[in-house]
Image 1: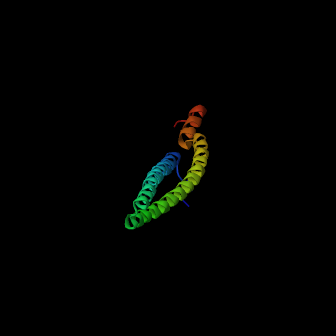
Image 2 (image 1 turned 120 degrees about the vertical axis):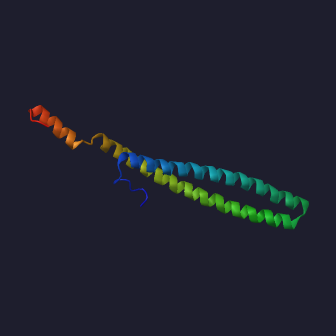
Image 3 (image 1 turned 90 degrees about the horizontal axis):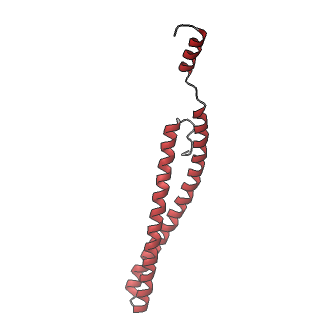
Length: 120
């Protein structure tokens, strides 16, 4: 499962979450571009209708169908990435809290020996 970061150290988990966030941003941009193109090609369909050019209309309508599919697919990817990044952010917060409580056992042992007056 791609949201399982429990076995990673905090730094690696942070990089992993950042990669998901970057992918989410890229997907949003791609969806926005596809939506803009969709509007443009829908306009072309109307222009072809007004001019009475069925071949141009057919070509533009095919492109509209492709772009609609692309927008729907990217919107679905975006929803899934938002869900996963929310889960990953929550897990990263937990990992961060655990990392702040992590103890360097060797350093702690050295400090205890020093306090007890034992040689290192």
